[in-house]
Image 1: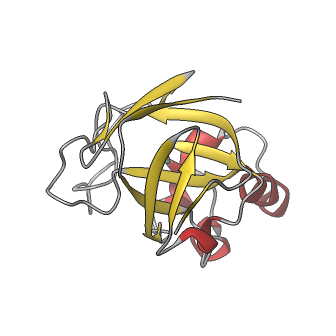
Image 2: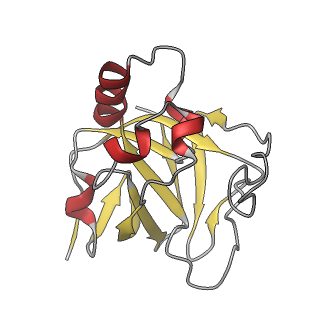
Length: 157
């Protein structure tokens, strides 16, 4: 089943490189998350210009989503007002949909089809990237990894 959830795209980000993957026991990298007005989704491959483009065959995280509502809650809970939502290194910051409900389902946003594959499990590095306590606070709500099923463009708004 494919459906189009009532979702608003608040921010879109890509990054040319990894800051934490492959950096265990070493300092993080310094690759910025670049905010863009639109991203080009390439079916089965990933996002044009992003570090996970053609990462590996059938990769379950060709695109990642994170709820803006969770970002707001974390800012209040951890008293963090100086970190943008890009600190979580997710591609799409959304509003209006429970991302966990999309795990195992096909869905469409702005005409682009996706398959929700798995939660983006929180990692220990988020305590450094955002604030101490972030990893624990994100358990069960770290975002969504998805496969891109059709080519298309996502836009903010």
